[in-house]
Length: 321
Length: 110
Image (cartoon, rainbow over the protein chains, first blue to last red):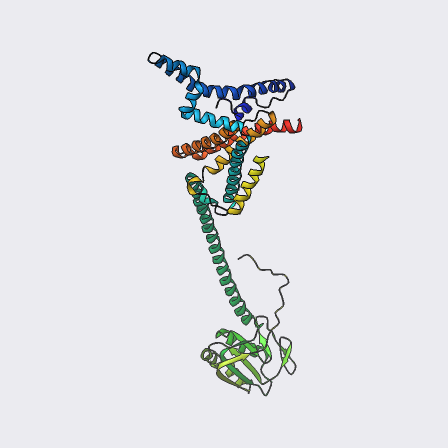
């Protein structure tokens, strides 16, 4: 195939200037005229040559045969066609017979169309891996493995972050619970919420109104000293800021008038509180000296419902811990 | 004319029959298709140049396909099948572009 069209096309690659295109135009027809002829001749010649050789060879033995052959080569051609001759004749027929050539070309192009359709379809089918090359598959597998590794790494990182956040969340919750407990106990101690628990009730009578604020304050201080956690004096919740002041006809606690008999509720260890109020020279003795009495009863449950109003601090702010 | 008709018929038959590509043919079919396309473009160009020759077309078509498939087959055996099929596609693509340019000059005179 010295002169197939593609080869021609490539040799005379698109020159853009006019001149070379003209040259091309000049060249190509001549090529075209020459090529088929040359092609046929080159195909026909070798057999002819060999025949002549044979003839020449055989001429020594049978000159008349040789001369006959040389005179009329066509019959010999027909009687003894070599494979090359056959193909040459087939080509000749092809060229002569436009129809069969067209059919052959049609078949080829139909095959091409078929192949294109098949290939396009198989390529667009979802399972594109099935027709991938082995090394491509290995590469894809490597890629996927690397990707899986990356993603696993990401998962581990995120898991660690999640754990950390959960831990800190937990500790936050714990801290909050702690703070709430602290708040509650502080509220109880400050007296801003009702309180309940074991303790004592003390009923102090003072028919002659001889007990002064001082004496009543002693009651609270004895109770505090005995570890009372929450104290209610009459209707008033006793806090750190509670004041006892003498007034005519009674005592004011936190500005609230109280009059005997005084009822005192205290939450703490009942025995200790009882003992504290009953010590010699203590609250009970003072009450008795004043002509009254102190009835102290240990209780399993004392409910203190009075609440104090703690003013929010005006000057003090929480300092650094 | 016949060729275009046959191409359409082939595409339709391929779409209707929905055949699966045999496994051994899978690496070669795309290359063979590109090679055949190269031959077809060469033939169109030759027709426009007025030098079309049925024999040349048929032989170039078949030999293109066979040679392209052979190159890829050899490449597969040597372990460079992927690269070699890329090379074949590039070369054939260049030729198709060259022929397409020539066809364009014929058709549009530009």
